Image (tube, rainbow, N blue to C red; front, side, top):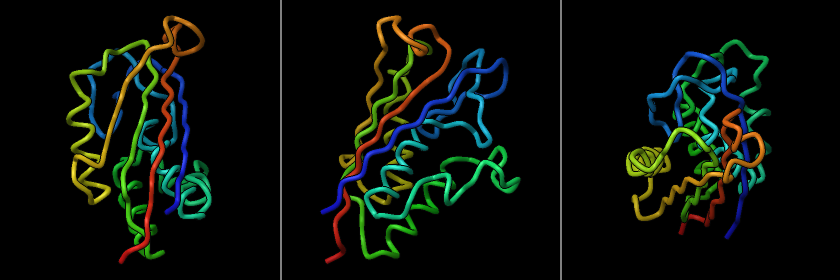
Length: 158
């Protein structure tokens, strides 16, 4: 078995589309990023790459490459899952925590889990997504941005 951990953070910017866990969420702000800024999926991608000893998201999808400008992070996740599978590994489970004071994410968690399970090619019972606030402390508490943590377990194909 292999364990990977991922983290990502992006600041809010005016306008645009807020995407978290592959779900478009109505909000006055989007996340400033080269891609769609989906911190939840970026953290998950880094966790997968880490568990497979394949580096990090920046190595595979650099923010200096125009090909990745505005790209859907679900596409990136599926690419990474293919790389993980090519190493003879599969996802056992994934656990994500999204840290945001705003917006409230509870109504979107189920769809996030469904999207992520689909892209990881696992059952929904293998994916857990949680949202928390920082009780108004720090950048997230001041509503300046969103952070996410992810942990994955990979095991070898039998």
